[in-house]
Image 1: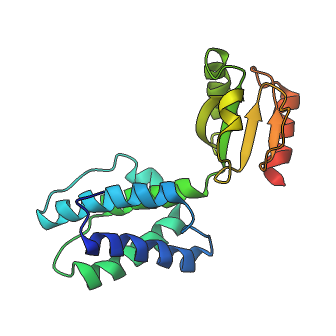
Image 2: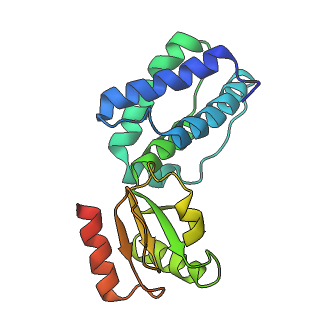
Length: 192
């Protein structure tokens, strides 16, 4: 972000560092988390400076489902607010959105690979999302695209086609319909 002010960047970096200390999870290596937080915090700072409030429709659900993460984010953000923006108010709704970014970063990142990356892959994506709602589906790509993709940010690859090359990420070959045997294989891979 070209228009990002230095204190916004520092706020974001320090928030990630504090959350690492609180959770013992390495967030600094997650470029998607950093970029998402930076976008949100940049807008959030503008909102708090002009006293503009947003509503998080998932607020109650977020606090109920992720109480520890919410408390950790709230503590870290309010501490940073004292340092960078002491005269401004950060709402519970803003805190919920920030909590969701960190929670999403903890979800296992999964890549779906199909022969062409289209067509039946949408069926597989929907089935995976239904059976494994905890998985973050990073993308649906073709086998050819996988050969050129960096997989270091992934936890698992689900593929409908056999891989004829080495990959540095756990993978499970599944059918498009994700039958019970496939589901068990995926569960086993997630536990490893």
